[in-house]
Amino acid sequence: MQSTKTGLVTVTMNPAIDLACTVPGFAAGAVNRVAEYRSDAAGKGVNIAGLLRKFGLPVTVTGFLGTENARIFEKRFSDLGVTDAFVRVPGETRIGIKVLDPESRSTTDINFPGLTPDASHLDRLTETVARLSREAAVVVVAGSLPVGVAPEEVGRLIGVIKAQGARAVVDTSGPALASAVRAAPWLIKPNDDELAELVGRPTGDLDDLVAEARRMNAEGIATVAVSLGARGAVFVEDGQALLSRPPKVEAVSTVGAGDAMIGGLVAGMALGLPLEERVRLATALAAATVMQAGPAIKDLNAAKVLEARIEITNLQKGG
Image (cartoon, rainbow, N blue to C red):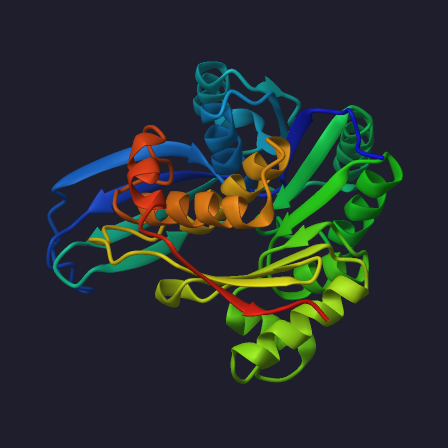
């Protein structure tokens, strides 16, 4: 029986203030001139929440937020119309500097250290996620973990979300992703390298990749989306396996593309779209995000233009 719950929640334990600088001809060890820049209150779950709001969906955001520079986040939450349920932690939310070089089409990341939540903060976050999950259809746990937070906390949160009857979506990496997989969330989105790390060996061709994703389906993960970078992505769910290839676009920055893909998949779930339509939407949103600087597209029109140009191939029939 389908849930009647409609709320969406994103959990960002390690948000960041993204300072994106465009520096043509960037060179280490030299004086570099910034052509343009922007600051964004960001982090995977925050970016995903912003995209979900463009669909008019109700969203609550939570995670850990530093008290000393919370204002930029609070303003963004107010502008987006999302409900702020972040747990405040003493100190500053981390800053991430992204240097975009349009000449080499490269991005250089400089990440500052972030917050260090203690056991009481973790308990408060767990209580918050449990409360929000009671009324939520989908809860997205996204991004890296703050220093001192064990990877097992991700798996524990997945258990809390599922116990309250919500669908858990996870976009993280390394031991945190492995912890999440053991707890069997509804959806995961590793890239091909992360999938190889999860299964303990390199995946070979697409048939091999699909076979591993099907094994995860059988273990309780309903949807496995595997990003292949510019080659597209593979989506495996309920006997279906689809390869989605975006059109060639002028890439400005890859920042936020993965968040856009998750946001598209979650929006599609919330809107009740079948898999192929979710895949088309998610791929178009990711491609539109790559075409601009900053982690969030201004509106959905750029993605809508791309949707008809997405190439979707049915890799295998269910088995």
